[in-house]
Image (spheres, rainbow, N blue to C red):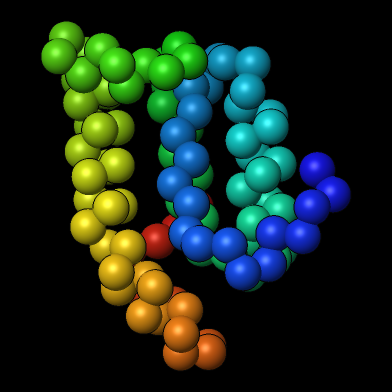
Length: 94
């Protein structure tokens, strides 16, 4: 993972606590932070890969989908904040 991530748009990363891609997701989040890219990493306890598809029956999956929806809603504000150096839009954290 040696790519220059500077200038990329905001990221929302969702990963299960036990899934094989968790270390890669955590590394990507660290690299994005180092590049100054807004990122929110969410780790869901005992969730499987692509657990969000079970939103009809799983409360954590429903919450994850709601988080995705909320993230999409704040994207316009994040884009404006990125145009103003030194400012970060509210609602984004790791």
